[in-house]
Length: 125
Image (cartoon, rainbow, N blue to C red; front, side, top):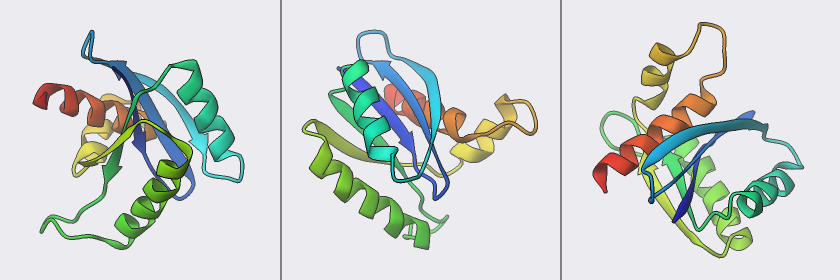
């Protein structure tokens, strides 16, 4: 199964991909969250033959929804209308903090957050 991991943001969306055949999470790219985001995502889904999408859900430390959670779930609703495969939500708490440890200062953490999310998912499987 080919998986796309998404770290959704209002401005940027971090993407990573991997396969259950190898259980390796690879960074992919950052796409701008603009009017062309669906075209870009559909192109990536086709290019990498994605069957499953993992979307990070931002919860607070009490496991409650935040304002951003509502935005991400709205994104997932639209994604489900565009994508015929399976979509799964995954708790993304602390992925940004971990990403900051692994990338050089000043670089975008979005892709690394998506990669960590997918890596953690592989470890749970």
